[in-house]
Image (cartoon, rainbow, N blue to C red):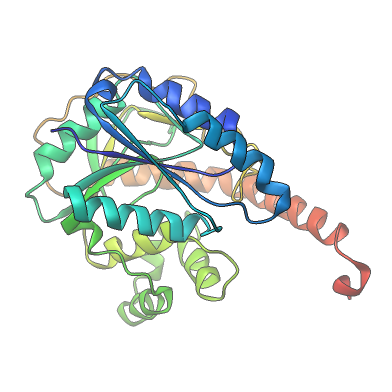
Length: 305
């Protein structure tokens, strides 16, 4: 049987529709069970968007079976995903996970299910990922990187048991093991800082905890050489948006063959990812600085002092 799909939605009906259209273009969709987790509105401003999304997902067709879980309160993205993935892996042993801004290519489900089957009993492999960065040059057909990821992914019950919700524990382990530099891809991306901010309550990222937990256990995630998803949420419409363009693929969605490869991290892919992330840091820093200035400028004057 094909793995169930967990789709996590909130208040963006246009984004959600594109994700659903992408899923239905997959031949495997009609034989797959879809579970839609609809989070409750955080405030009255979100009511309209949440209602529009729920109207869209009620009565969905094109899948073997559809279950819509509507929360009466706002769980937030992290709690929603952790709760939903825990439920589905507990019931079915595996799950494919999408959010409302991750559009799958027509061969996404084929790749995900093939990889879930192939590596189900390989303990070094913690998850499967659908996204791959638009690096310069070519990548292997499939490859492994240490850790886990969050833009269109899948795992098994045994993999999800690795997840550690306590970011402080993960941060302490990174420090004790002196692995922060390696975790940050030798300075290419500030993953440690993201984890520090999660611990401090400045973000509520489940993904940084998932990545850190898998990384600290020395586990691997399989990636496709050709991205099987496109992220459309970096347009400022979501909680973590605001970096449109940098991660966009002009060419994506080529079918990917899941063949035998060494169960080890690909240094070639790691270096390509690190180089791409390093090249983006000035652009991302400028965007984040501008975003911070806008936030401060819009704050009450007493809050600026």
